[in-house]
Image 1 (cartoon, rainbow, N blue to C red):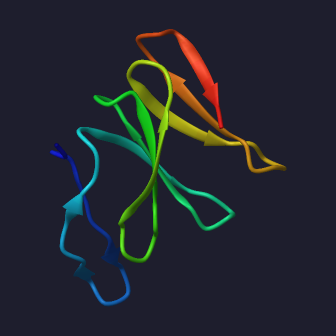
Image 2: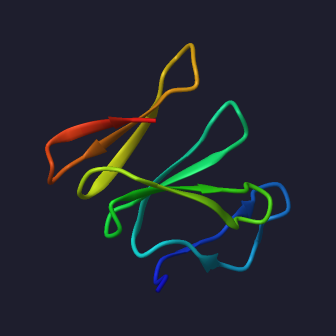
Length: 92
């Protein structure tokens, strides 16, 4: 069951969108050039793909154990995910 939460803050208006469930333990997030919002889920060995407007989870991508930092390739759509406890990097 989800225990993590994410929310969006409108910095212009200073308003926070109500928090919504997001995985078990969200760690890092990255808004990619393709418009997708990626969230590493430390406890669930996955990267979640969220709709940036609704923050609804649209995909669950399994990766190594304890995914943390996310990085996007500078010229294409590849996403690199550091997986701490499996001592690896997943490429999506």
